[in-house]
Length: 339
Ligand code: 5GP
Ligand code: MN
Image 1 (tube, rainbow, N blue to C red):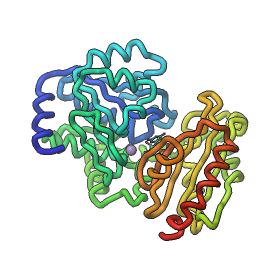
Image 2: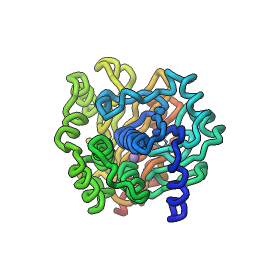
Image 3: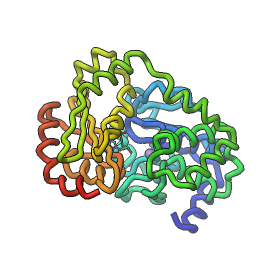
């Protein structure tokens, strides 16, 4: 966003507006942290802002300030549609293509509201009037901090906003360890602590609330781990039957793919998770170094994301999906062995 864009947005925000804020489908810590923080901020400016999530999210996010007010499109479609139709402004956060909003795609596309995108994924679409896209940013939460700061309202960042923003920065940076973490990221996190974000409590809420079933499912995932050393690749699969055995709940497989990536000399990791309800295989991809899983997901699995973290899906069965993955890999051997 240019300086003129910020002035225009500031003008838009001068009088109270009906505002809808949307995170991506299957929202994660960054998507929910950024949308809730923006909602707190806009409501502090006397707007009527609501967060509408395309669908539900894991229990370990169900403590964020104002989380209980989030509307879920898949279970409250009528109420959500009327809010979207009446909205003067729509913010889309932590995604950059309307199909990432799931079933909300068509109603968002049809809305005449002014759209503002804040996002850090690669290759943004052009649906918003104002696009704040920066692929170098650790997280959308870090961007929402800059957005508020650039509007001259840093002093409005209170404990609730700081808690939401710190959560998303922490989750998207893998607790500040991924290369996307910059010294600026740490300065923003430090500022958020000064505003009241309790780093130990937030970490505890997200990472130390495991169920016994989830730990057993992790054990299953690790025993399914396979290595293809000539491609410096490791992958995990989980069938619906295995998920059922351990009473799978949304979010239980979050972070499993990182165990595959943590193997010595592995630069590319994948997890394939069967979802019989949606009849798809959900795929998460991670890499180290320059190998772009965003490009890989776009080319082969209808997905996208960042250079080192992306996702996608397959509409064939688990075995065929993994067979396809294994058959594609050799054409990337050079890139995977170059790093
Ligand atoms: P995860 O593997 O944790 O679900 O997602 C990793 C990254 O890829 C996140 O930034 C997420 O937003 C993005 N992502 C996950 N699934 C998809 C997908 O199906 N399509 C696109 N475009 N991005 C995805
Ligand atoms: Mn993000």
